[in-house]
Length: 81
Image (cartoon, rainbow, N blue to C red; front, top):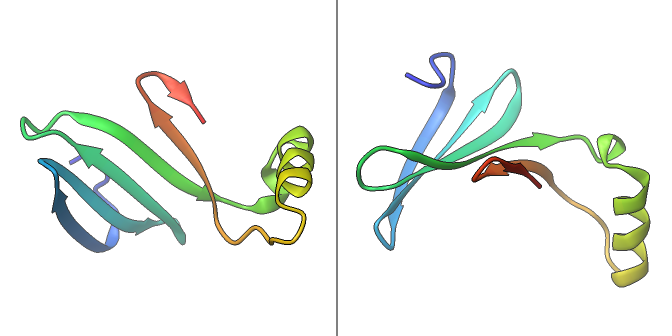
């Protein structure tokens, strides 16, 4: 009910937590739920260009030989990461 327009929905169960992956507005999303059905985290794919410049610079410094593939904005316990 939280994501009524979700498409390509896939559920998994791991260590007592339920994870659902889905598409919404042409973006990859996920949500995690506990065994009582309470959402404990959710995330949405964002464009690399939408990363704050400080984050992009830190990643390039720490992982100079790597490229960024996927970027997600994650909300957990009221904090956005």
